[in-house]
Image 1 (tube, helix red, strand yellow):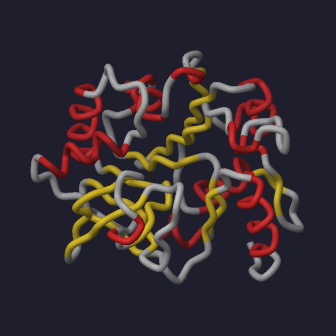
Image 2 (spheres, rainbow, N blue to C red; image 1 turned 45 degrees about the vertical axis):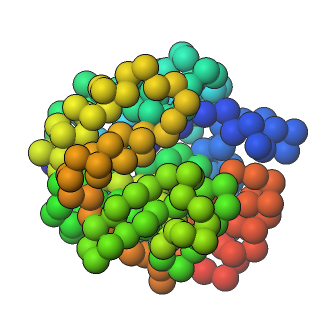
Amino acid sequence: MVKAIILAAGRGSRLKGFFNKPKCLIRLGKSNLTLLERTYNNLKDSGVSKINIITGYKHREVYKVLKEKAYYIYFKNYRKTNNLQTLLYAKKLLTSSFVCLFADIIYEKKIIKKLLKNDNDVCLVIDSSKVLEGTMRVKVKKNKVIDVGSHIPVNEGHGNFVGIAKFSNNGAKIFKKYLLKEKNNYKDYYTQAIRKMIVNDENISYINVKNEFWKEIDTNKDFIDAKKMIKKINI
């Protein structure tokens, strides 16, 4: 059984003055669903049974959306850390297979379905058609990810990390070991632990969703662009 962990603790400071709730509560499309509801539906429709949400900023507002449909962990130190610490706070969940998702993304359900079919220990969802500023970029070689992070120059990146990853039972245990080694790292994304795995020759695979729709919403412009894009597709 695969569970899901949704990272929804952040403040979304780049949307400050435009949207004063957690980013996962942004509503888009004719359905007017929040990003969180969309992810929940995508996961449930794909057969993921247990959905865990790590909250922080305005956590009570997040709870009101799904209530008892999901499980919650409140991470009180969200103001001073990045999502490496957010995920580390939920380390008790990292003992068996899971899908990890950023909470501020909108994407097609088929991406989750495709990811769940992958049986590698660690698999990142990437898009080779985009190498964007202000995002997590990737470098790949053959069927492996050889680097991931915002430190990769745009002109050297091979694509973008979409913000969704899957870990098998064995992959979860290996990843947890590397995450624990970063327990004093308060500034980085959890992809820093994946970078350390790569350095130590752990196999990080990927699926490429260059032909699928997805959008991370970090800024006012992202939100405006997402509204325009979603009108063209039926999600």
